[in-house]
Length: 121
Ligand SMILES: [Zn+2]
Ligand SMILES: [Zn+2]
Image (tube, rainbow, N blue to C red; front, side, top):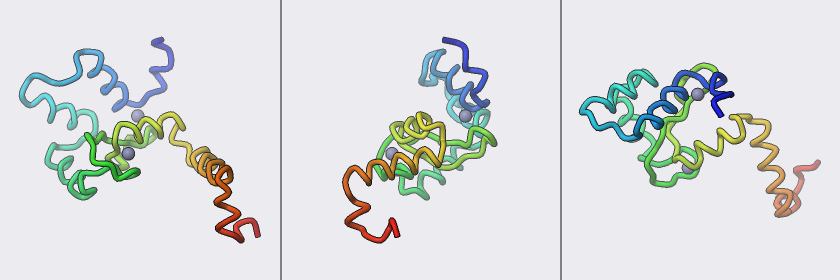
């Protein structure tokens, strides 16, 4: 169960531990400390980011409790996502090739490629 955790980057480990030790922060200031420690973000910056996205998920545009999505190699913040989309990227290991392949698969299944025409030359 614990194995594999070492493959997570710092923000992931911090998020994991935060959940393990009781999820929501009770102490005032704990939330801002969490984002500063984990992502190097102030709550103001976080809010600005959310505002820039219209407080919607960057993928599905759903209004939701947004979570910070980050590049696990660099720790760099990519944007804010709903928990579902964020989890989805995680399941695909942020692998663009896999995500494109999944898209192609779904499109092919719906015959969208044929209807769109010309995509196969
Ligand atoms: Zn989403
Ligand atoms: Zn990570």
